Image 1 (cartoon, helix red, strand yellow):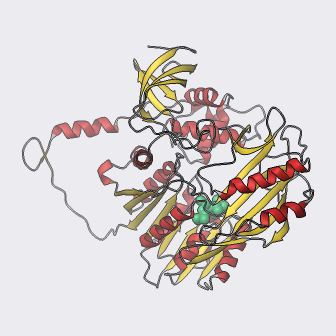
Image 2 (cartoon, rainbow, N blue to C red):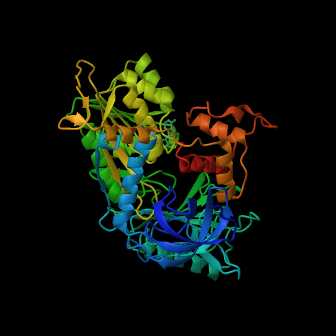
Image 3 (cartoon, rainbow, N blue to C red):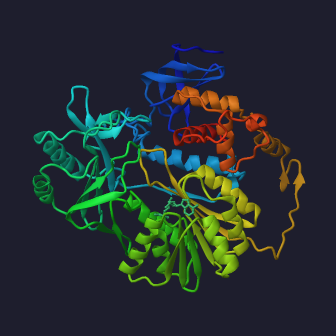
Length: 560
Ligand SMILES: C[S@@+](CC[C@H](N)C(=O)[O-])C[C@H]1O[C@@H](n2cnc3c(N)ncnc32)[C@H](O)[C@@H]1O
């Protein structure tokens, strides 16, 4: 059956996609419905219809799923921050566990029974976990000042000073800043005109130290009557740092390069386990410290250190994992591409009196081979925590050459994790444990820690198998079932990717852009005859927005 735009359908949601959208089928026609959860029976209106599938808007929940809960936040549907707040926390965890497992099967080529999945680590209280918030400031239609969050995939601000994922003091700080702006007629920044002063309010909170940082991002060099605002903010217990960040660029980047301290220290200090970290407005720092500690403890446990090991921490950021590992290793080497992060890492090592950690600025794919091949620095254990795109294949190849006993892979994207595990498995590393950690409750994101150890090639086992019915024999039915699972999936064409993007994002992408993203992800190009198609202006590259949309489509169709 084929449907068209504006058709009303009654659909039962059977599955959830990568972005938390509900998926159901009506007469063999697949429908994606945002804001629904598995088990809901809903009425939905088709907004974009394709031949075999369509995107629909939720009109009415006819029978709610038993796993549906009332979101705490009144803006959960509009806000881009959370995607699955309407699903019970228990089921959110099950969804994330399944997401990791599915990717390892579909992309990594693992059999379900081969995956040593550990029960996912969730939070006891999955609210108020974020130690950092960046509130955009603007005006509503009547011209009143507002602060809040961007609606999903847009830059329109939803006025909301009380986010249940952030700390409670955020609201008090926002109230003081906005009252000050109102009292002195200080205009909010307008993205369209590039005029106005206050762009964002950045707040950081040390969960252990209770120290607070407030940084106002301004399109200028000062804030009128700053003394008065500072005097009010200082009364909040724990206030440690008040500063301006100057951003005069017409850009989507929140922070500019220059900062100006108004009061207190330039940084706050916080601890994860026994390690203290100094955090400035610009520093990258994990946003959920409670779960980060569990994640790092797992990484440390998997590293299995006894005190004599040389350990590499690739993609080390400000050295958070490196310093954790340094407690138990002989020597740790960290590699990170951002120079400022390495400065933080070195400062944090000094702050903690850690002398067995050395940090290098550069690309992991360049630093690692150089240090190994030219200087002979080897590895007993290698830990990697790459960005969403995963590791470059050349990094994995060098890691394999170095033959560490163990590899600990920390990942924020289980699709690229699965791709990289497939490579490492092919090179003699065995996946020993897979542990999901829920760092971001109410969102679709999940962290995974994987332990791999080197399979010694000094032995072999003989496997005898007999097919047929009866004890000790492998039933032929099972073989048929396996064969069914191995059947190649429907080929994902460039046309399908283009249609998906146009339907979901409302813009078109060129074939050559899709090919470029696929190439960057290291995906095979043999199924893309028109990937060689030339652009009229061949030197242009897709914008970040288009790259994200293409990756999303590739995930949607399970190419990555
Ligand atoms: C997921 S973060 C991990 C940060 C750190 N391990 C932590 O837990 O705080 C990934 C880091 O990889 C860095 N990065 C990205 N590409 C890189 C590359 N080619 N070589 C080295 N570092 C890179 C990013 O700047 C970022 O700090």
